[in-house]
Image (cartoon, rainbow over all chains, first blue to last red; front, side):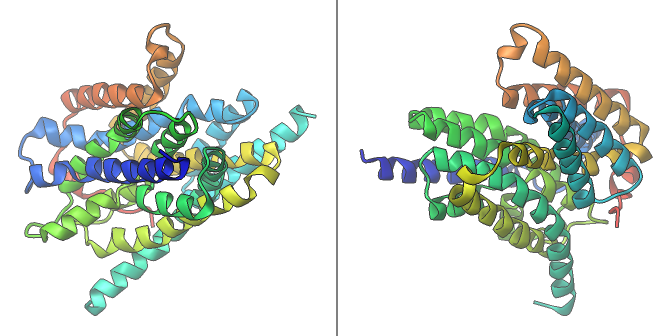
Length: 105
Length: 244
């Protein structure tokens, strides 16, 4: 198989698999779930997933872990005071850039 | 398209824009990886436009770079994106009764961490035009970022890539912290998520699991515990208004 064909097939697999996962629950769950446990479970899922994905990954994304920790704290404080997605993201990026500027010659 | 639907679509596009800016930064660094895996800019654009998954694409490109078998790539896609299965299930609870099947499916395809987050915090039941508008803008910016990353990737200084790489996490924080401020149970969930996720990354054996698998396991355990300890009332779920 040529490399070009291999890449095209890989792209196709990625597109089909990812979207299949997204839509799989939709034909299965029609209407409101009555079960209180499942409803509560699904209510908490998004927050927990994002929290788990953020830490410690943010520490590993930067060249020095302390920059990632600083970005985490700044991001928490900024969002606590109601700043939106974009300003918070920018603050985190700027802080990491600043800290690494001083720590990495 | 009615006037009302058009207005909601535009609102979606407006909310999609800051998400798209954050995406752009992230997908640019993803493009660097895609380029190393051998994708050209057009291939990267198409892949990103239709996949729209940060961890999923990262996993995928690293597999392609290693000339992995298709089955490995397939499993990687399932593991890194399995959280979308939970999100898809959660999203069904926001659909209007009698919403057409095709629109339900298309809304499902719109799911990313951020589009899901803004859709779930949409006041009342979800209007399909909202995630569609947001996805149109954010998805195109995500794809453009990837393509540009493939083209310009090599010339970017490492410290810029490093700074941009936290954009995604900043966005995650902006999504989870405001609800945590309003709801103590959510705050405890977020804190437990941070702590347990950190512990899982340092405890031997557990830290050998891929981060995708750890995310799924922790999400299920913490959310189930929260659902048992502090079940939500209907009012908690529906009163979630947007932060606008």
